[in-house]
Image 1 (cartoon, rainbow, N blue to C red):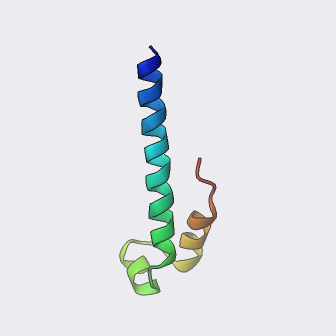
Image 2: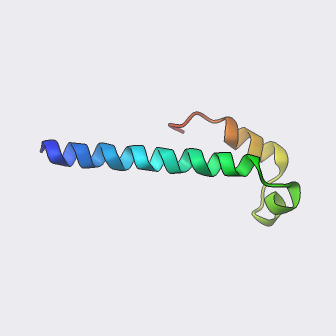
Length: 54
């Protein structure tokens, strides 16, 4: 039971870290690349400002 909780926590942490890295990457994309993925600058900035748990 304890091991299962640890595994669950570990997966949760990794998913939040990945989300954080992805959001940081958005900040460095130019407007052309953002348009390629269907975002504009203001949408990307809103996404970047979200807290890690969202």
